[in-house]
Every structure is written in structure tokens, then in C-alpha cells.
Length: 257
Image (cartoon, helix red, strand yellow):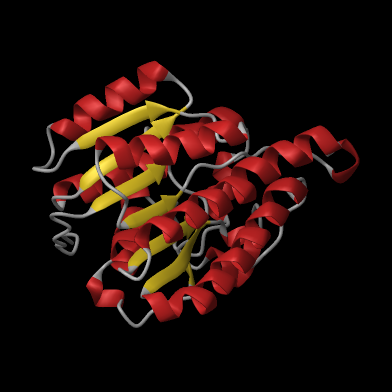
């Protein structure tokens, strides 16, 4: 099935963590739809490679920069650079995430603060700057959370808790910003078929068996949901958390024995 066609010509989109996985798929989808695309990552080589690939896809401009969202100063610098090199974003996709498997007793305060900064504080500050830049001219914010905000998993206390916080931020912003035409939604992916899961997990077959749809979600499927939520087709949708997980959250099973 072919993806839905969107036209984001003349729009500027900022995507955090836009050099691999979901973030790169989102950046590619917006580029193909004619948007000016801004991405960031921590590694200069990853940014340069992604920018080169995105330049070939669409008619809009592409801007990439290094930024570590665990560093508060980098968050503000990132937004200012996008404004200076492209324009104030029309769409913000808070995709970058800090994650890891830490049983509760091992989840020390340093790890907690690292995840909170990347997963919650950076999206808050980027969204705040986005709102101040947009004024009354509307726009869309899409936050990438996880279906662990619906079903919970052992060892994910930091990741799951900070993403639940991001859901709260999503809904509160949706309510408070409706008057100025800014819509705020979230997508909640389940297991996504990216190289990382094959590197980091030794029970991929058991995880696959736990998927009601019999497969993992693809990055492109998550990207299409994000494009929809930021498009005029979703003009009456705000404050929604859209699970893109093949029904995984309906079961809640982490792995299948």
C-alpha cells in the first residue's frame, strides 16, 4: 500500500534525533513532501550523512547541526540555529530519546536526571521556544513517546516515567495552546524494526512472538502517523496519544514465552 501524499511545501520542520531510525524516516517523509527540514544528532558524521541523503529527496532546504539534548545550553542553541538558517519552525517533532534497561534499584539519580533532561525537559524547552516564535500563527507539535505509557515494562522506570511525563505535557499544551491554533499530539510506537533492537536485545524472537500483528512496526509507519497529525487532515485533532504498535499495547506482554 502506498503512503498518503502530503504537501508541506513552504513549511519548516524541526526533528530532534533525525539521523537514524524513526527520526530519519520522519525527516525523509517531510523532505519528500516538500518541507524545509532541520535535524540534529550528537555526532557530526551522522548529521552530515543524513543531510546529504535528505538533500536528494525534496525541493526544500535541509539544515543539520550537532546537539546533545542532555546539555540544556544545546537545546536553546539548536532552536536559534534553525531559526537563523531556515525560519521559525511550523512543525516541531520531539523525537530524540534517552533510554536503557535499569531495574529500579539501579536507576540512580544521575541516570534519572539524564533521561529526564533528554525525554522531558528538552521537549518542554523546544516547545516553549516554538510557541513564543509562532505567536498566534498556529503550528503543530508531535511528541514521540512509547506504548509503555499505556502498558508498563520491567526495567524501564526512567524511560517509561519520563515518557508518561511527556504525555502530560502534550495534553496540557494542547489545552492551553488551542486558542492560538497550535495543535499538540503524541505518537506511541511499540517495538520498531530498527537495527538497535537486534544489537541490544538477545530475545528478539520472543519479542516478535508477543506482537499481535506478528511483526514489528516500521519507522515509515510511525513517520506517516506523525505527518498525518501535523497535517491539515488532522486540523481538529489535539491532545491525542496515537498508539502505532500493531495492537501491542492491547495485550501488554513484553515477551512471549
